[in-house]
Amino acid sequence: MGTPGGVIYQHSFASEKARSLTGTNFFTLRKNSRLIGNIAFCRRDLADDNNENLTGYYIRYLSVMPSFRRNISHKKMDTAKKMVSKNHGIIKEHMENFFKNAEKYLSDKSENKKYIFYAHIEDENQRSLMLSQNFGYQRIGWVETTIFTRVFPKKHKRIEQIHFGEHEKMKNLLGEFYKDHAMYHTQNLFYKNNYYVFKEKNEIIAGIQANVITWKIKHMPGITGKMLLRILPYIPFLSRMFNPGAFRFLAFEYLYIREGYEKSLTQFIEGVCALKKTHVGLIWTDIRQPIHKILAHYVYPGMIHKISKKMTAGIL
Image 1 (tube, helix red, strand yellow):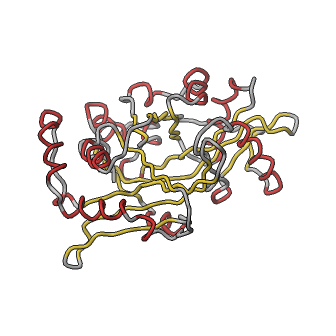
Image 2 (cartoon, helix red, strand yellow):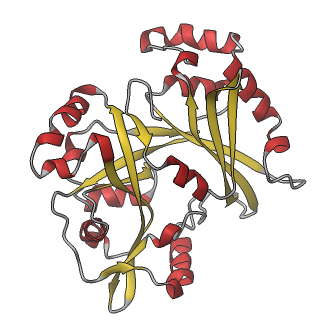
Image 3 (tube, helix red, strand yellow):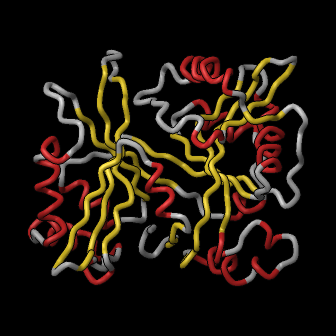
């Protein structure tokens, strides 16, 4: 997985993750019984701007065998665009057919349904960007990655795993917090009971979903990437944060913070890392989102975020 020329990684527990995905349609492309491509469409129950029900499908896990990819450089971008639009290769042909007749293939076949398909594509992934644009997708925004790191994360006694009886209250808090956001959903909320809250006088002032992910890193771009791969794993203490063979981190989502308690975020996120016995956490936020500005202003992410190249992806 990943972007050619960028970060290339392998999910260490891919089969377990795949089994946990509800409402997901996996499609594979084979040639002579040989698997050459894969893509997944994850269902999301959304609402449009008029608060009417909308069925969304988040496109992810697109992977194609290297021998069926095109090598595209920035210098050859114009030529490549013409080549992609003219050449109906096997991958493009089948994907184009799918998008034109999606309702025939997806598990939800209700009549008069509104569908929306969307994806996140890294800026460096020119191949996927051109392919998506060829199918009529448009970039409508950007998400940016914040990398939170601590060599010695500190626990905090007011941080705890949410209790089942608090689920409905937390849903309401999150619903109010994200009420002005388009396409908000709660499909993965409380996944494996990995939601943590920060309390003051028994009231929830912050909350976050923290799922443990493990990757095997194959490649990282640039001088910083090479340094992280070759040097950091052998530096005492710092190696806790990054092991290319088993890069373990927390994927953060569903972040909530009560107004007036923004300064508690660093302590909260660090405390969750300590409880989960991890040293790295990643969170992806829309750069126009208020929570993105809150993170940038109130949270000290750590050394790796400061020295790393900004990682952004388009919302299409």
